[in-house]
Image (tube, rainbow, N blue to C red; front, side, top):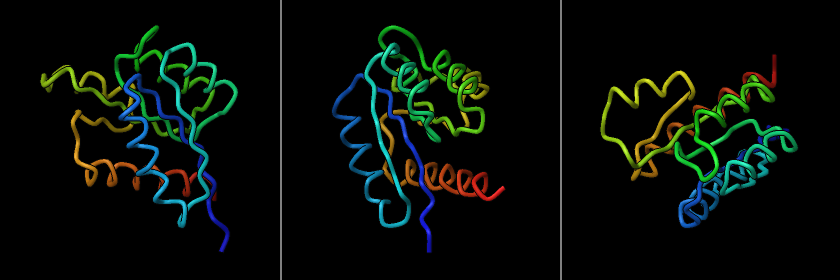
Length: 134
């Protein structure tokens, strides 16, 4: 059976989070063909979006040089069928998080449990598979 190939961009200036996410996502390589890239600044992330055309982007809401909502707008412009996951550890304000929903397909409050991340990521994978067969 042919694997669905999924390109993933992780945008976070916290290297520990990037490593943890890459390691966890890599555990799905037996199910999916994956290419994972990361960026730690807004400039690098926008360049990666324009060159890499990711299917899935995980982005911190606050990134040096920009913010996650700006990145989501660029992502929608270049990759309109992408799945975007926002992440933030700075707000417990549910109203603010709800307002971010217009930019993201899913949102995680840091710190998050890997089980919560896995559920969201599996949903993203399912969407990418459905879009690839259409």
